[in-house]
Structures are given as structure tokens and as C-alpha cells.
Length: 93
Image 1 (cartoon, helix red, strand yellow):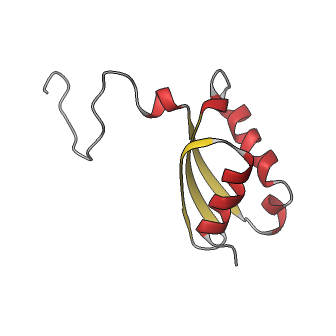
Image 2 (cartoon, helix red, strand yellow):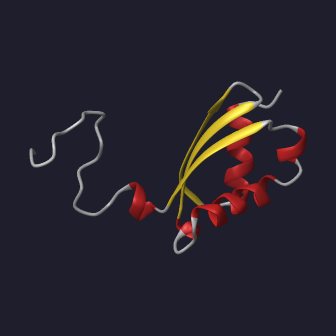
């Protein structure tokens, strides 16, 4: 059974990630991937980049992979404070 850490290693070996978080149960995984190489690419192209890195593992070891693929600018917009897990009402600091 594939571990989230092993999957993280596979992705990190093929993409120069600024941030990479992977969780899962051995067959179903979720990944948050922040990578400059995603700049200017549509969502489907970003996912295809990750699938290309994983290759045959997507057929053999990974049953499902849910991805959030972001550029560093999308993950951390300039002038926006980091998300501390607190919801804010629009117009309030």
C-alpha cells in the first residue's frame, strides 16, 4: 500500500514544488501542490503535468488523486495576510 509520504516523494521528484502536502489512506489521496511551473496553464494542463510525473503509478498504485494545483502567487497573493483558518466578513479587517 502506498503511503502519503511516498506519493509526496514521487511528486517532488518530478516537479519543483514550493509547497507540497499529501494525505490519504493508501489508495485515495488528496494533494495541495504549489509550483511555479503551473503559471499560465489551465487546471487540466496542471493536472496532466502531475499525472505525467506519476506515470504508471496512476494505474497501478493510486486509485484516486484529488489535487489542488496552484502557483505561488495564487497560494499567497501579495498584500493578503496568510489564512489563519478564521472566516472574515467582507469589509472587515
